[in-house]
Image 1 (spheres, helix red, strand yellow):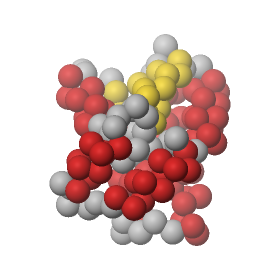
Image 2 (cartoon, one colour):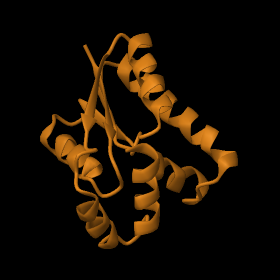
Image 3 (tube, helix red, strand yellow):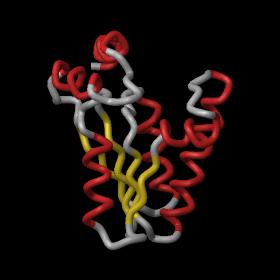
Length: 137
C-alpha cells in the first residue's frame, strides 16, 4: 500500500533535507517528493501570489493522486502548518487507498531554523519565521 507522508515545521527545520535523504536512500521511482516552493518556481517564476496559490495546491494534489494511484510513496515536504493542508492531504490518501503519516519537525528550535534559513540562497527571513511560529505554534 502506498504512503503519503506530510512534513510539518518551520522553514529551516530540516523537512526538505530529510525528504531528500529518503529519496536518495530509496529505490529509484519508489518515492517522489512534492514541494509547493518548487512548483511555484517551475510554474510561476518563483512568485508567491494569492491569485496563483490555488493553482499550486491543485498541482500538488494532482501529482500526489497520480503517484499514489501508481503505488508510489509521496512525500509532501512543505511547512504544512495550516490545518487545512493536513485535512486535504489526509483525504487524498484516503481517496487513493494510501496510508497517511505526519513527519513532525515543529519541535526544532526556532533559533536553529533562523540560522539555517540565513545560510540559504533564497531565504524566508527571520521576521517571517517568527510570524509563522506566533501564528501556528
